[in-house]
Length: 261
Image (tube, rainbow, N blue to C red; front, side, top):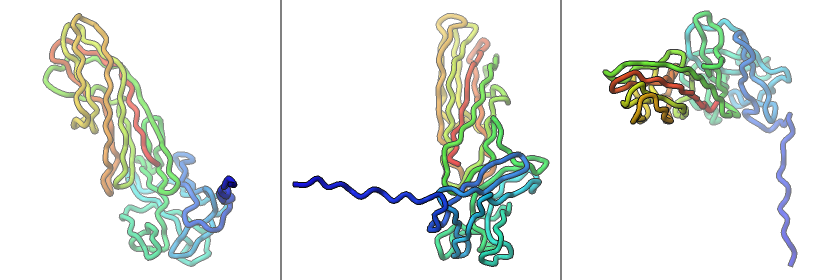
């Protein structure tokens, strides 16, 4: 009896001609995005496998200020084989006859990403904002923030600190994972409550609680929430919320957001 050894898998070279979406949209700076080759050099536009240039395809800011829009790629003038360019526009994509997500009006423009601009029309990708995501060849992106805050509120959940806000965009149907962990205390023997909120205006996660049997006793806090991003949604804002039933609560949390982009 002989041992069967399966054939080694075929690994496509970095410039494989067969692909239909061998690319990734990358944030370069506040004034530039670039569609780069990834695993190949092709992007299907209107049924044609267009060649992505070795230096990528660039989109320069400013774009429409204070907006969330899709990023598209296609040949200039819709002419097959012409130089590729990137466009920033808001219409929801549709699926064409070749199974590709495309611009509803200019079908030669294929969806490659999504981006968020500030009031000056510049791209947003900072320590607390994920404002550029790729549609193809996505990976986990993460941001985090940590700050201490004290509150004597006893009337209900309040946003603990604006500095804890984390911002992200997505595609419809994406999950944005929100995580929070840290410690808290109350200066008297009372409860301290914590939750993940949305934009400071509403509770998302279950309410965690810590009861201090003696004043200033530390307790661990931890909660998470998976936000289902809606089609055509805007900037999702994660924040930390909390309150105490009496006394003054102090929180030492870190919030983390994971986005598939």
